[in-house]
Every structure is written in structure tokens, then in C-alpha cells.
Image (cartoon, rainbow, N blue to C red; front, side, top):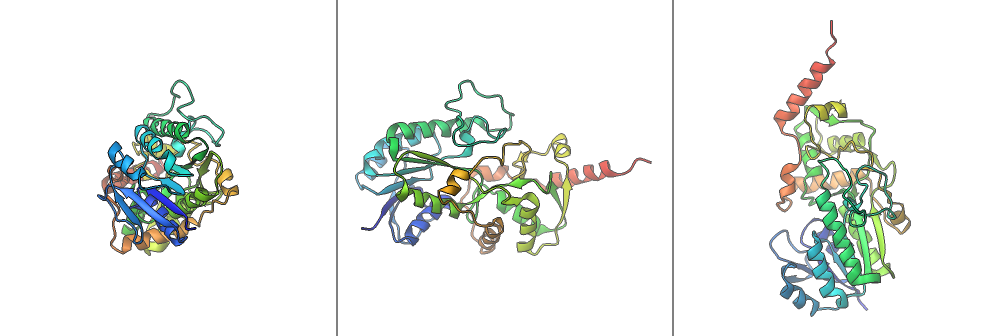
Length: 342
């Protein structure tokens, strides 16, 4: 019998990658979205509706059952609670894509799946003001609601940073476009800083794998293996694919913070907190999660950008990347700091 899967979302970035992966396996794929952003892959059965409306969810449940549901668009606890309650009897496995931000210790501490999430941690932890605790807390409550409603039917995936073609947050696209302009490029912090982003297509493959392999409730962090890449490796890959004459100027992280640079947003992927890239993905790797080289993700994202395609509009994209003026000012301040005092 052909495996059937419902993708909540499915029209752009990770959701589209999941639908495409399922189609390549020969599965019967239904996607559920509003039909307002992106485009559904050819070959899916598209059901248009709004997951915030109970009537639309009830109608969707009546179209099942499916062997698995993969939820890539559940961004808040109330939305996930409603969907998992309504669809619980329409599937044998529900894969929910969450985030490493659910952990009470992120991004300050090394983390594994056994450590508490924000919904279990009691009083709100003392974290820096630039960490979006509210987002992590909402996703943690979403996980808890899903587990209550689904029990052993639930698989939770907690990715870190997801990159790749169609990325709408704008992290990798911003770096590629900045490097393409060439000249002197502000490179943040330590060139040997290890980073562990993952490719959306690899997350999609693992989500489909677990959709048919799991037999009990399970949780996986999805991060790249240790020593997967460094900031320098990443930026050199950007230079290579764009054919740019960019020259990297590595600027001390403390200096950048003292001069008003915003880590994580203005300089994507750069963050000084020690737990940022210290989320263990060992459990997922042992279960078959495989990460392609970061250089491949960079190359394919550049090919996508160069084709003239654009990501769906998203408010988070506007927060990513330095302006030319601020980069120039930071580099000028760095140069002035380096001038020997006679």
C-alpha cells in the first residue's frame, strides 16, 4: 500500500521540502495551507484552509486518515493544541517541527534532549534581553499540548538554524548578497568558531523517515555534528560560489558588542553565548539524521537566488543584516582602534 502523508504547510521552505521528499518516495501527499504564500509542489493534493479556524481543521480531519502528519507550520501553542486535538484520530504518527529555543538553558548552556524546556523550568530563567524567551516558551507549550493530545503518536523535532534554498528568514541570503558586493567584509568574532546549521532538505528527509519509523513518543535535536563547519569555512564558501573579490576583516566579538552590533540578527549566525552551537544532535545522528556539507547548502542557495526566485515575504527578514553605513562605521572604528599610539 502507498504511504499517505499530510503536510501542514507545504508551500514554501521546510514544508515544501518535506512535501517534495515525500513525493520522491512515491507517497500520496496532501498539503494543507491557506494558498496565499509560496507554491505547492506539483503532484500533491492541495487542501486550502486556515489552521486557526476550527471549521477548516474539522473539514481536513474528515478527509483522512493519513499514515502520518508532518506539521511544519505550528508556530504557537493554541494553534498546535487545536490541530493535534482535531487530527489525533486521523493519523498513526504526528511529526511536529519545534525548535531548540524551547530549552530553558538555550543559548547559554550545552544541551541534550533530557534537559528541561521552558514549560517545565518553573520561574523564567535569567537570560540576556536579546534572547526571544517568549518564542521559545510558546513553542515549549505547543510541544506539551501535542504530547497531551497525541501521546505515543508524537515525534518532536527541534532544529537549530535551518538554511537552504527558499530560506525566508534571510540569514544565508544576506551573507551571500553581502559577499557578492565584494570589497572589505566585516567578519564577526572568531574565524574558528564552530557553527552547526542544518539544511532544510536534510530536516525534511529525517521528518519523513521518522513519520514511518517511530513507534512511541520521541524527541530529537536536529543540529549538525561537531566540527561540521566554522564561521570562516562558511564565509569562504560564500566567497567561492559568488566569485567575489571580498576580503574578510575579522573583528573581535567584544569590540562589536561594545560598538552596538547586534549579534544573531545584524550579523547572522554570529552569537557569543556559549550554548548557541552546543546543542547535541547525537540522538538524531544515531537514528539516521545526515547533514550534507555546509558548502553544498551555500552553493544550492546561491543557485536558487541567482535563478531570480525569491522567498516568501516574512517580517523576520527585515531584521537580518548590517546596513552598508553601519558596516563602514564599525570597520572605521576597528581601524582606528588598531592604529599604534606614537
